[in-house]
Length: 230
Image 1: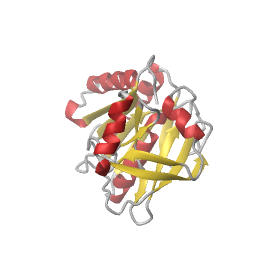
Image 2: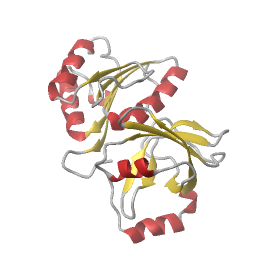
Image 3: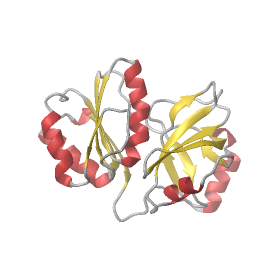
């Protein structure tokens, strides 16, 4: 979760205009108690986006947070962001205050390309902060006739979702117990571990005990207990 001096953030926006885009808030959907989906509008005709990419939002004068765009549509000039509304971070506060018609300046999509199109089966582990990443890659996996499985630590056990995921409480044992059930079926998968850094590391250790090769494990921790999160 990067923090930069205000003058540095200002200079980046002023000196590198091609790396930023002005966006307008469109429809806002309260997907669940803790998940808010916001549609943004802008000219995307010359903007490229790859599955699982990240857009940097300047959520305060000195704080930047990364979010994965979903349903990136060049023709319509729209994309969605899934925000976790928990009241305990600058990204959450920003998303909770936005209203239709508001304008923001954000980075163009970028980041690491960790989606592996060469694999047929894809296993996802994460939490509320991982949903955008999961849905973004799921679109691409479905296009390629692949198979995806999602295991998520969520506060809302009855989160309404059209996606085939298993929801477990945020306890160390719950996710690992589910892994034990499904590991043989998904052993040949590529594993994407995102969200809470401690949970990601614990899950990776468990995968290694199941003899999963490190080259088939993709890590992307988004937040850490005790630090200012999303």
